Length: 150
Image (cartoon, rainbow, N blue to C red; front, top):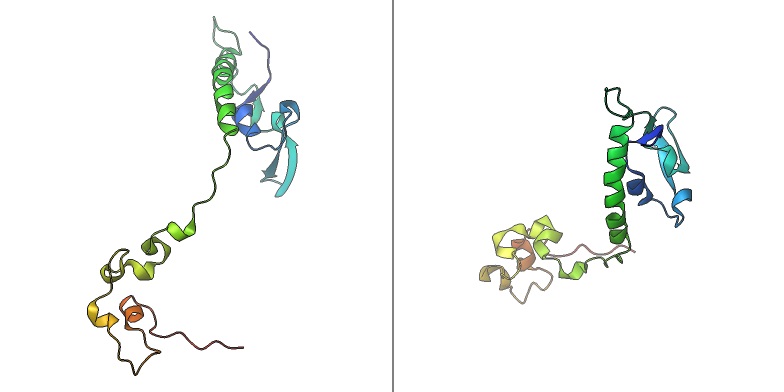
């Protein structure tokens, strides 16, 4: 049984996931102290812990029985968590492949859903009005673009 005093209620292996250090003993993260309203960088071993947080006074059990049990579980989880950290990041989704309806709420009407055309009455436009676009109006957009200002 160990005699640890600094009991972490946030596992150190989890906190190290937010560090950019390779050396686990020197892992540092940025923290925000709510009482002083200041942020600073500190070692992982100094945060997410309280002195004797899991200590118990029960006859027949070591005072650090709970802390030791948690440490045993964390020692099995930490290597698995570390394997997931080395997975290369995925590229961001190609925005051009997103459906139009999710890109703009203006296109959510049934006549402008992806894969469907605006009503035929909205598509036919007299040749005398080239600036007007009834298909845009059918989708809730202005029929013509405002002139650009330079």
